[in-house]
Image 1 (spheres, rainbow, N blue to C red):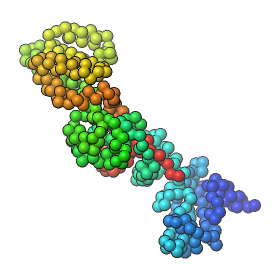
Image 2 (image 1 turned 90 degrees about the horizontal axis):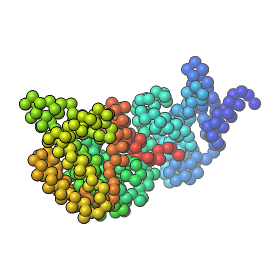
Image 3 (image 1 turned 180 degrees about the vertical axis):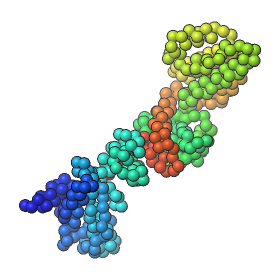
Image 4 (image 1 turned 60 degrees about the vertical axis):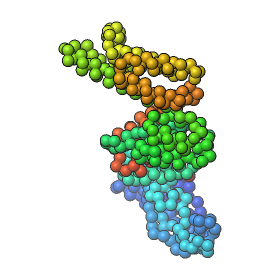
Length: 411
């Protein structure tokens, strides 16, 4: 057996090529560290219609094509072949499928599997491109194909608890709407804008049967979201996210602090200078000197101290198991806050009262958008790594690729 014949047999085994395909030639280009493997179809063998699978005669061969394959050690490896066209009595002349690549693809299935692994491991398309030796457009197309495959294969049976939230997209008031499976820890879909139409759009990823099985949705008080959920998922409980509510209360405390600080400064009093973090952050994470300073400030007759106490007291609401006792607690808290003459706190209290029924649902479901917020952090990392996205379609596919827990691989 000649060296060339042995090399062809060797690569045939490595590629898993079987009759009627065979290795015709292997060309080593040492100067540019490249291997090109030429495959050919054994003439006289029947072709197979890619539509119906029926054996039929060969009409002719298509144009020569090249696919990038996994590297042979340090050598970039390419596969070159002319694909036969089948002459099907039912479907006419059709280009056959090849076993090593998807229709229209520039990469073999094995290379795409490896590229997907590298992309997932690196978390950065630019870094993955450098490791794989491919361009940005090629990497994005691999991602797009992988997401299309994953969505086709995805099963959404048994969805019970969802999360809906917004995430910034471009600079300014530009948002996307993100739908998450809270139990599965995955993004289900993404739509551009923060509107009722966007909320409807992400819910279109669910069939009527899947929608009917949803028991609860964790969501902010954004009215377009709330109304869309009521319309599309009428049986589901709306659970206003406790972390968003904590943010509203924190913001009110900070408004009280800023107003009081301005008032004190007008009298030459710098008591509240540099104290913002003390009122907004968790005291459990304070250094010893911060603890001492915070205790001193709380003993002063400050408006912000009363606002902070109201915020902290409200956290007990989430600990109740009985709806009746939770309602009683809220009523007493509401009276206290609205009589405190702290306008920002009173405004939040009135807002919470309007949405009280959707706060009480937390006691039944105990869900928050913590999973969604965690995924949002990952989405922000993708956005930062890409230095922003001009195309929403690419942004959506990146999110689903990295956060959708999809079956991404080619067969």
